[in-house]
Length: 376
Image 1 (cartoon, helix red, strand yellow):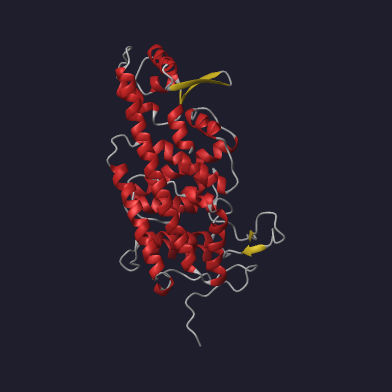
Image 2 (image 1 turned 30 degrees about the vertical axis):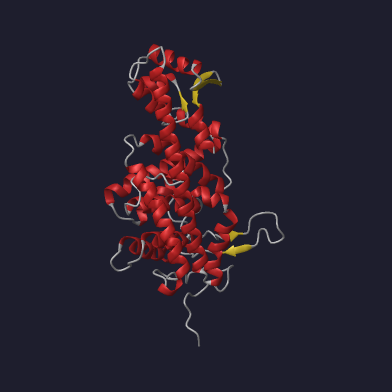
């Protein structure tokens, strides 16, 4: 009788309470193709890490790239907002935001609250996942109650749309047991020794298969991906634009994930996640370079102008931390007094660095080049 490398889910309509615990067998991930792709992903991620680490003002990256990650991850869940709506909402954080923009900003806050939680504890635990989920969903709920008959159904409009493709484990003690196994796998690099990118890919599937919450599992799992990379010091801050690849290859994301539970096909799932890391590390690297080079070019341009600006470095640094700026932003940051801030922003509009927009009776100043870079 052949050796079974990974017991699959025998009936996708019944809770998979026998979801195998981690780790998985080495034969499932130690293949030539996976090792080659792992090398490519590690090289791309290391280049991004090295580039971002030498930038003095991490705010240039933290605000803009994390917003892109939040927007893409939310779109995977069919939560859509325009760039203008999102950037305006971010610039108005002291004002109550509604709709899709509010959902996206919650994801961004979860990126940062989870990141700070791990900086203090340095270890993953059940509370970490619950906190991230609660931030995303703005709820006090925890692990889903036992009475829920949770199923994952086929989306789209094809003939099989609406059919059950997966039913996650059911029962509080079962879910907690599998989560405890997951966090032990994540934290114990001595017992479960493997490359961190492989461990991230395996853990992401496991979390989604456990599906511990009523809703928001996909976004929670994608936040975890970034936090795992920062926790293992493969990135300093959560700036990898990882959900961009998943959004662009959404069908493959779900197909390869289902391939694990239905066919035991870990190879295609791990290759998918490694390609996502390589692709988005390269995209993020080029966006960082574009932002930094453009910022330096704009600073040089206004310094050479006939009309001088006080503290031009501080002004341009701030303008490249988010696409929309208001007079009050510069005042609150103690860069300028109100009249000076307004004068300088209007002057930059005359110089075609900014574009003045009136939205709902309020004036915003759009950094056109930063907006272009982030929208590409």
